[in-house]
Image 1 (tube, rainbow, N blue to C red):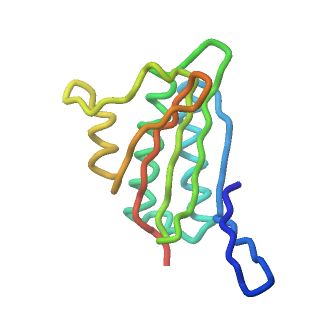
Image 2: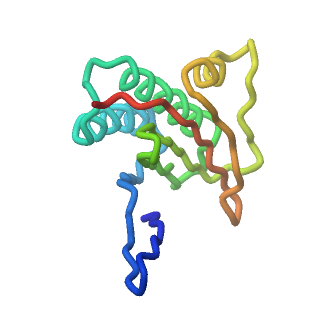
Image 3: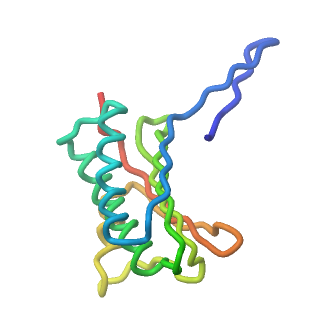
Length: 144
């Protein structure tokens, strides 16, 4: 779990950012479960179930998880979904799969990353050694 240290005189307090992580099977069912778990976690964090930001986050997770299943799958390996609340109140979504050589691209041929690009305030990809990658996206706040 990520944490940030804050120094208060001689004492040190640790502030932890709320985070949710789940390993999922690299199947259509696993991708669907990731989307459903995202909505439930966001509601637990105070986001509005029927809010625009919650719907955007669910769509981004659906696209990234679908890409992990379709393009990042290796036999016997799943993918990891991580949701982390940002200090701004927004959300960082990360989907990690074992296929680091297959990077996502924004293309008119496939709409997945076009949707992510349209809904996220920012997104990118980083290596996940030894051979995987993490595709991340950030969504603005959807809570009070």
